[in-house]
Image: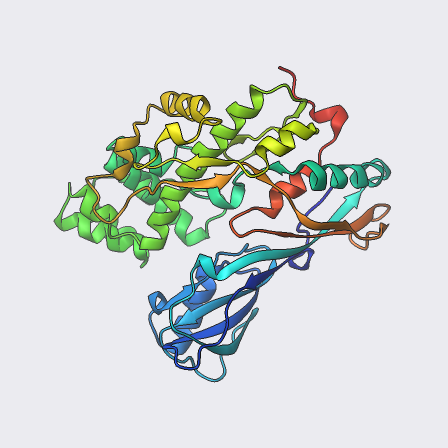
Length: 395
């Protein structure tokens, strides 16, 4: 199975509860974009409109390698026409409050599966039926981790352990393959000349990273103050990435301890096992169950099903819940929460199998379904891509 050979293979439409409020002070827009991350699209729109990007608020973040439709709000009206390549903006009305994630009720997906063999075409209906009947573990997927762990460790973990300089180093001096050439070059130079801030300032291209180095020239050991000069949304991603990893690990430990047939599935942050099926008792017991998003306010006693597995993950990571408040960083913190253990795709259907125009001799089909906000369609696709003969997890 091949996914995302072209952006049109991955179509996402945000389903919103927005209703126009004529007396609102926030202006709400529909954003259609192709092959652009949400935050980058908002920055482009802000530059075109001559305003600060922080005055724009997106309800959610959508994939880069996709064609997506979503909503955002602005603190003032945007120009009547904003013409940008691969971006369309349409005014919808006003709202009293800026849009947030709570403005999203669901996301609708149409994902083209390409390069399908005859065996895959034969397996897919059964795999789809299993995903619809039993759900899948509600893992976080690569979009949550890509470009943040860098293969060298999580920035969020370094923060919890009080290693603020290391967290800065992971941000400023750890290149990864999906960065632009300029960003990669900046990080390679930062890695080579770490600590020689004066020299590094003269070498780096203009960027937000260079602004941090300029601060270190005058304040060479003010690691915490420097870290909190990173864009708030990016600091939030650093924290969320590690919290999401801890959730995935808790679910992994839980599933490995159950009497289940499991498939071995991988993403950038590790193994995310999938079960073949659940019995009726398991579906009933786990369907509405929440697992913790670990933070300084988490009481593990509130999660009897997850208790020993979350405790084991914290021990493995040498993390104390109280340290997740990040007391050295007043504007950065983990926040306790919950997340459903299982994810059930609503209205999952497969389109007709037909010849693939991009892969000669192979077939294609479109999977359509709806997911609650915060869940990952790619997790559903990983379930549909399983080969039972190849992927069975041996324990």
